[in-house]
Image 1 (tube, rainbow, N blue to C red):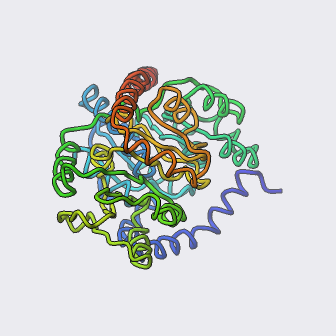
Image 2: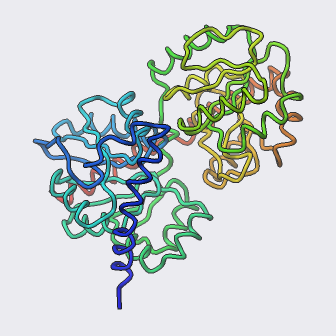
Image 3: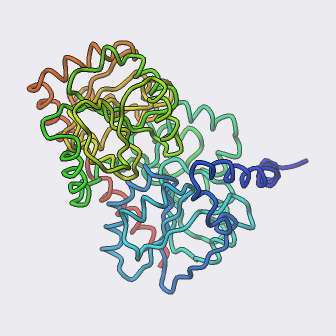
Length: 422
């Protein structure tokens, strides 16, 4: 009779050809998915010469959140190399834009024993950090066998995800028990990890509150404001998901106003052309951000088809509507908006960021609509009420400052386990 771990390994082997077929399929829209396939199987051209700290950030959001932690680790441990791994090309490209080239970057291999063993034997990390909800049974077990401290940091687990993981006990319990530490974002996240079987669990806060708007982000914002017009009123639909663009544009007769500009930013780059085609079908004039040209006053939509500019979009917007929350996708991170004083409107679906969303509403930094059809009734009065927008922006900045400190808390944990190993 096969054990749970062996059944998982068998399924992983059977799915491996499909994983590479999926890379090919996704490369139709994003050619970067065709590159670095050997890394997916644990083969790497780079080889570190000093002790190494490894951090895994699966994609764009996790990579951006990791920046302040990476900067502080490099400052405090200059004798160590730092390795940053990803699963998506967009995460890797984001790292190239935001993080020093001295930080190694590559893909984490697929969770197969031979691949994770190659990875760990090649890089020999002194300590590993997994961001948010990366729970890979073979990887965790291999680190445990090698006595490599492995921490799940900035850890979050929605109720929906917890229910899904609970279907795969005892494998999930066994994996969580083998983690050295779980540093959760909130007490609710900590309770859900504990209920699933994690042993050492603490609350360290959310790294996204510690993200600073760097000078590099301020420059594109100034340039963007010049392109769209300094006096023009702007509302932003940030990180929209499939179906949400259609929903917003169905409300276009109510939401459109003379001179006002919508910046429409799909969450995933492979959907940029799809959303452009939707605008064309609806005969709504637009300019692509990637064209980097002025947006005339009679053009009502700027399609945000660029990477790494979300902070700039939040800085120029008068109001931001958070994508992923209008339809049941669980919402997107609103902290980048509150950090720069951009008022936020949330839809009803925020279970991926539930505590942050509720705290922002309570603080006066965000407003929630109970369904998308009510968006015009909230958005339009807010756009016409400058004092209220200023008050919400100030509340957002205070809200962000009050929740900072995760970098310090996580560094304390990291250095405790590094000291214990040395």
